Length: 128
Image (cartoon, rainbow, N blue to C red; front, top):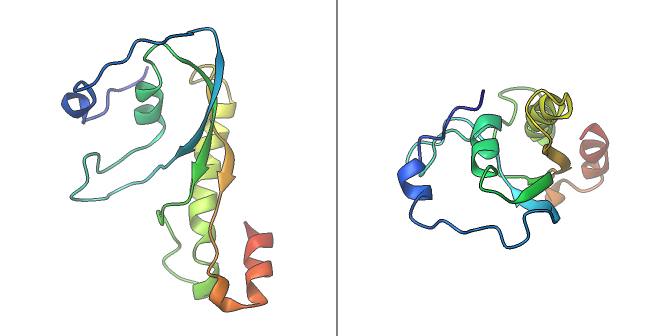
């Protein structure tokens, strides 16, 4: 069962009818996060994105783009960003189970690394 997002009033401001509801779509850019006070949607996880995708379009997959969420609280500073990739990969695994519908959330993940760390950036990317 999908729970509705807490931002239903905001989402309801614009409702678009799907022009080609059979056309398979990959949503190439979205974020997922927990605990962002002051935002329209303080928490945006699997249920929220699935709710947003339920408007009649045939979204078969999505690509997560880094947003600075869920970095590790400890460990080497350069590697803390790997926590975000691990967090999203967990949501992707839930989606890939098929238990949440046909859309594959975070079928692609674009992580982050601080390029100012020089050669260490390669190790961080490998950890991603």
